[in-house]
Length: 297
Length: 233
Image 1 (tube, helix red, strand yellow):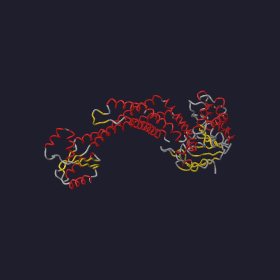
Image 2 (cartoon, rainbow over the protein chains, first blue to last red):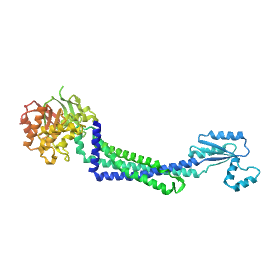
Image 3 (cartoon, helix red, strand yellow):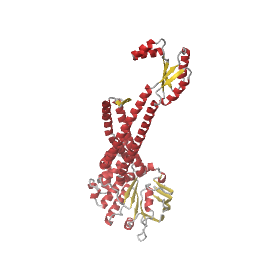
Image 4 (cartoon, helix red, strand yellow):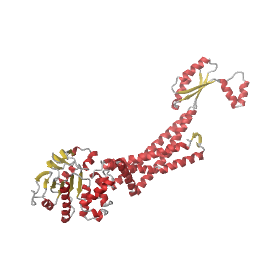
């Protein structure tokens, strides 16, 4: 019960303090708001890039054409060899006859030409999917060296460029987010510092009449927490409405069908949750920093 | 074992100033002791050590059997709850009423509102301020403000009341009234009182035990009523 009383009093004091130093608290709240809006944009970008990369990776496969006239045993050996690679997740055989049927379905012209020929000129093939796109080049090179493999195709060059560009963008986004979070923590810490200076007499008396350190610190930590939470309200609204509108207006794609946007529900709620958590933690961390430095208890 | 014991206590500040040198003294429960000395003689350091605002560089300070110098920072509040402190500058919160200022000391230790009220009114009654519970500090005279400070110090029923020049800012007449209140607390509640002061008249009139500190050294320890006015403070 005593704990609840102390927490209750701390919450009451925190709100009082925010009211008393309203202009300062307002500045901190606004700063948190701006930061969290940017953080939200960054998270949405990063998640969508991640999603697009994953989609590309899922779509991507290595196509292997085999020499013509290989025996079934030889083909099985090649399959085993490919599967022995740790980066290979799936290896599907497609015979030249299956290719022929597929090409016929695709175009009657191709069908007529292929029917005209006595022998099927197409080649047996494997379609290989990999776990790690960054090692696709190595895997392809290995497969190329297997005896009986005529050609290996996987959209080399372009894929790596797209993936590595996405990777760089993602890293930049993370750095920006971390920097913004640190700046906000610093500003909140400054707000709390001024609150502490404003209340130094009260704190001194608290210490002298035997208030525990937790009792003294708690209102400040809660104040930081509240500033963080209030600061996250507007970014959350912007995230939810903004992303839904963006998704609808863009038809689920960002400029090109290469980047498919993540569906808004439940994505926006996860992002909102992250924003509240970041807001609260940054607020608390900022105020703890100030409390440790200026209370010296 | 005495209630307060200082055993070979020395205090040297970081800037090299020796505030106390090898001081040993014992104070019994319920005693009223004046600590006198010139400015910068070390009496404030002595007082501050009792409530662990300062730590001794050497020696032990025992209050109620507790080695004060050994208490960790995070646990100092436990000691302070057993001690009441009265300051020269009152240290009242200007935005709180008389009642709230006194209640503040109990709120800080997490006491229930129901328990706080009778204790605060009782403490204010003892210092003669029951009629002024709703006043703010700036509406009170210096003497009245000091009484509020005393009420706040005794509301938690401490075993030890430390007064750091409580009459320093008051005229002689008001000082006498304050001393009456403090003496009453000593007699009625059997609270041990240690009071640092510059005021010769008070020390002479009260006829209590007197410790004289000079340049950090305890130069005199006069039993009750033995101190004479012609001796320097």
